[in-house]
Amino acid sequence: MMRRAVLILGIVFWLCIGAARAESLSLVRDEEIERAISFYLTPLFEQAGLDPKAMEIHLVKDDTINAFAAKGLHVFIHTGLILKADNAQEIIAVLAHETGHISGGHIVRLYENMRIAQRNMLLSMILGAVAAAAGGGADVAVGAVLGGANTMQSAFAAYRRTEENAADQTAVSLLQKTGHDLSGLETIMRKLKAQESYQATDDFVLWRSHPAAKERLDIILNQQKTKFSPDQKRMKKENALFDRIKAKLTGFLYPTKKTLERYPKTDTGLPARYARAIAAYKDGLFKDALVQADSLIFDYPDDPYFYELKGQILFETGKAAQAVEPYQKAVSLLPDSALLRLGLIQAQIEKDDADALIEAEKSLSLFTNMSHEIPLIWRLQAVVYGRTGRQGLASYALAEYNLALGNKKQAESFARRAAETLPEGMPAQLRAQDILHSLQDKKSKNNPKR
Image (cartoon, rainbow, N blue to C red):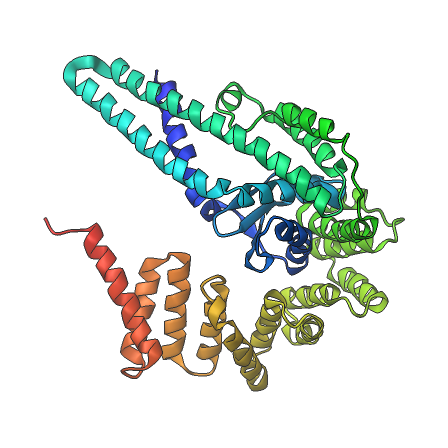
């Protein structure tokens, strides 16, 4: 009986997790990979009537084949999807499916159904507690909760299966409209089927909310009878991008031995060279990594990501002053890249001379509207302020940084220091006061006087 009660608690968490799912994920940032995914997603969004400029792409460090969408046109892609795919068409098929969820309004309805489900689950728990208090005992209480949970879970799972099937059908239509065939959708479904078989447990099958991959695969194979006219030129470009980003992820995330097995020295193609350069850097073979990075730059002098790699190797091996030049070149080739510019700013700060700090501060001023998305910006500003003798502003920036990370105690400490140090009425001083008042109000609400 105890195991069943724990299972019920698990269901409650499962129902709640969607709303806060992104907050507990291990996210990674990479300009090149995010742009590749954007290239794949843009035509799908356009055909679905969605605004590609509003989409937000997030990479999740997770080895499973998966992707999901959240409110606000947020699309999350597991690194495992990229690493285990054989070509771009498999990734695009998954993205078409997630686009189907977004365009079909499934995400908004999912949040609403989760809210209703949580309310009903809470009602079942209350009824169980009332039954127990009335003398029914623990068995009656758990029975009441189980009844509510089973009914709610069955209805929720059936609803999700319907939407998954609808998203599959939308994916087929979007793939056709964007010049793709169904080969990627078919092969990724076969991989999902194998993953399902590996992961399956009694509880997993019992609480499944998606239709089985076999069922979905059968429907897709039936759709293959429809004639498609794929855009071979675009698909070739998509697959070339895929080869690069898969090689890059392999180099960074897989053990060096596995990387070299997949990309042996006999492979002289760009993706293999890229993967081996990254693997050498990650393995501590810095001289070799720099030689390989320079070789890539020599052959591809207009590729910003090879300069970024060289800058990263130099910066993270304590050669910040030397890292500035390759980062500057990367930014000049891709001036609208926030991540490349942040790499340059970090190198300029660590170079630690007056001119470099001035340039770093100028660049940081361009990120005013992005500081809520990238807390690192506040930390970098704090370092610049500190090294140029503006301790009050440094304290304010650290208050914002810690607030963004949820470190309330540190945020309060730095905000108090900034409020006391900065001139009265200065915007940063007023904002520091706002942070203090906000944190103190939350303290009062959480700890009311008795």
